[in-house]
Each structure stands twice: as structure tokens, then as C-alpha cells.
Length: 308
Image (cartoon, rainbow, N blue to C red; front, side):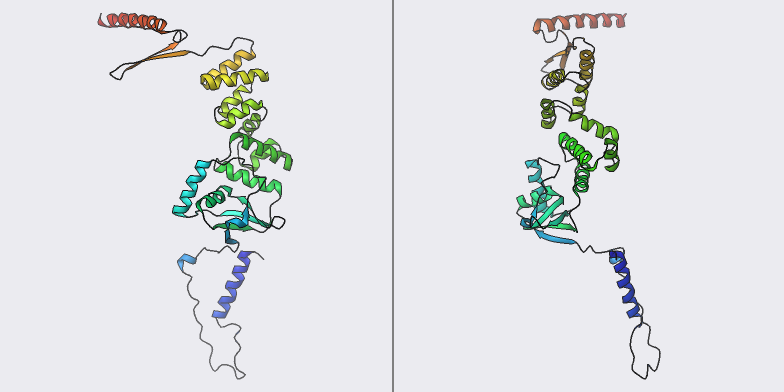
């Protein structure tokens, strides 16, 4: 019987009792029909409310993390901020747990950050929703990936590894991963493409120095050594995505990669700034002065033409 069915049955029994049904009278029977009492009205605050039986406060030390959790790293600053929030405002969302007899503790299904932050905050217990059983590994991983994706907690490489594990554990295709997690196929495909890149590039993505979208563009290069070379250029020279696309196209066509345009800037005391961008901008002050001289001559010519 479901919780709702049980609630309906109990409510019905209470209503019957309030209406006088099932009451045993004396042998002579009642001298008059029993008075019918109106059932008390349900308070507005209780309407549409069903209490959850599997919610509980559990001691922090009785809870442990899931070793297969797809999230591998936890930002210390973010945890510290969450711990301060827990101390100031309390726990706004329960974590989800299930009992593991073999470990003698509740295992975290979703909400490890909140549990870790609660430890930092010195809280003795946390609010939990207890699952009747530990989900199957593939099902549990899907739940954890969904939660982390919705909150954007997973790093790009962690996310890609989680997608691949889901495919291996459940026999899913990339299309099925996208459908099950309500993500676009292109999003999943781009994430999985990161795992085909050289480890050196994956480390740059993991560090946050190389955007995932740019890394995917680099992955279009045919040779892995070219991929690493262009990725390092992106980081060192701070290439834009358009410049990366041009470099990749040139490499694949056997042409020399276009040089990144240099930039020189002159700041004046009155707040004005003059920038020179081009192949000669990085060749030294004399080259920049020559570019500025030509620019002044053109401006003077345009001014004379306007005056005429």
C-alpha cells in the first residue's frame, strides 16, 4: 500500500468514527438516533500536505561519502562559504542517503558538499532523506551526474568521465546519455571529445586555463603533437577562438599557422589611450612611431578633405 493509499484509508476510518459508524450501543439500543457530529475542518496549512516518513536528522559521523561519486575535487573556498551559510541560515536542503550494512553507515547518494560543509561548520547532525535501498550503480551514478550537472558543480573532464562511465555501466550510447539526463546530444558529444585529447591538453582544461570549447577546436587537428602545440599557444599567447580556428585550418591544410597580431598601447596623462595592432606593433618603439606617423598623415588628409 502506498503512503497516499494509507493516508486515504486512515482518513476514511477517522471520518467513519466521527460519523458514529461502528459504535456498539447497549442491548436495548439507543433511544434516539445518535447525533451526527460534523468532521472538523482541515486547517488550510495542512491541506495538500503529506508528511515524509523517511526524513530524519542523522549524526554527521554516521554518514560517509560514496567512493564512486563522479566528483573528484571539492573547492575549499566554496566549501568554506557553504559552511558559513549553514551556520548563519541553517541547512536549506536535505541530503539523500541510504544505509549500507557492509559499511555500518549511511552512504551519501546526493549532497556530499553539504555534508562536508556541515563538518567544517561543526554541525553535529544534518537533515537527510533516507532511501529504502542503495540504488544500482548505474542508477546511482545517473542521479549524481544529474544533480551535479544541474548545479554545474562538475569540472568538464569529471563530467566527461561520468558520461563515459554511464555508457559503460548501462550499455548506453551517447544519444541515450543525452536523453536520460535531458541534455542535448551536442553537449554530450563535445564533453566526450575532451577524453580523446592528449593528457597534457586535458590537464589544461582541468586547470581552467584552456576553455573546453577551444579544446574541442584544437581536437580537430589531425596530429596529436599539433594539438598540444596549438593548445600551448592558446594559453601562452591568449589566442581567441577565431584565431584558434584559423590556426587549425592552416595546420590541416599544410600551411603555416597565421601569426597572432601584436599590440602596442600608449596611455596619455589625460586618460586617452592609443592602440596599435598589427604585424609591426611588437617590433619596438621606432616601428610603432612609424605606424602612428602614417596614421596622422591619413587623418590630416581626411581633415583637409572635410574642410574643403
